[in-house]
Length: 353
Image 1 (cartoon, rainbow, N blue to C red):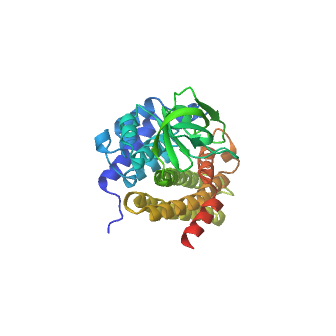
Image 2 (tube, one colour):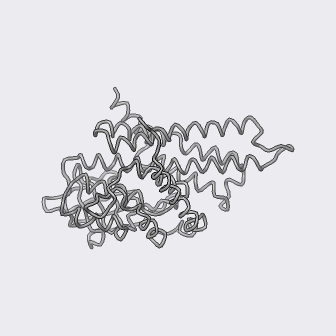
Image 3 (tube, rainbow, N blue to C red):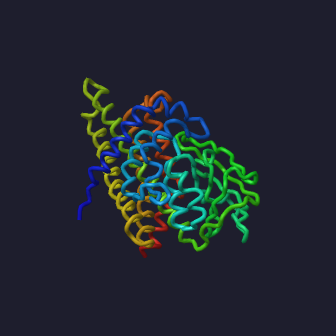
């Protein structure tokens, strides 16, 4: 069995890296850091490359590819701290609709999601002490929190118990409120529905489970790229910064930190890529196990990579002017997205035991 990425997959990732370096360098990331959404010419360029439609079936205007094909491009988006809604729209919303299989909703939303003219989001988490409900007509009532890229969304797939409901974000009974977080490269919002009319696309829980798993894996794949770049920056600095007449990279303490970072990234890369394969080729049970394992590992180790990088940089790593703290914030967000490491480890223990 060949576990290597194909030449075409690698070339696509290289194209995304070059595109982001030219069109969305760190100056761009900083310029939209406080914005509620990042859907602009950079987003449209990624759509032209084909990123937004990779998972969409060909009959709806997409490429009909799998998450393995998108794994390396997602890593490049993390490496560049791209703040646009790729995981929410091109992964989660697409998977929710296609897995549910509601033909009418697929025909309405998927062509636009494929070409990037429509932005989707998925609202899974209820506000504390509340429960989202949907009646037989598809009217949704509930309060969702930490919905990624909801401010940019034209449509939102809302989870109501085991059901998924596709809601037009322009519905007057939908209220989207930006949520301030430490990480400006992720655009979160609260979504409140008060009898918003939608289409029930699935009610048996399987589509919701597939969406949650795939969304989580996409975020892990993004995190691989962010962690990888944080290590690169730390090594570059350790070679240049001198103390006591020597580069700090010659000190054993710094070497140990870098070795720990590399170990975490490589193990996370292995489990993340396996989870991407499981989404494409394994059954629902193995997909969930692989997704839980990947999310537990990323939540536990990836943010420490950036934390160690900041330790290597010392005082300059804490300043706004340096980029390394932006990577720390991105990976800190990943460590909490969809549950903590303890949550995922408890779920993994329940699956295994």
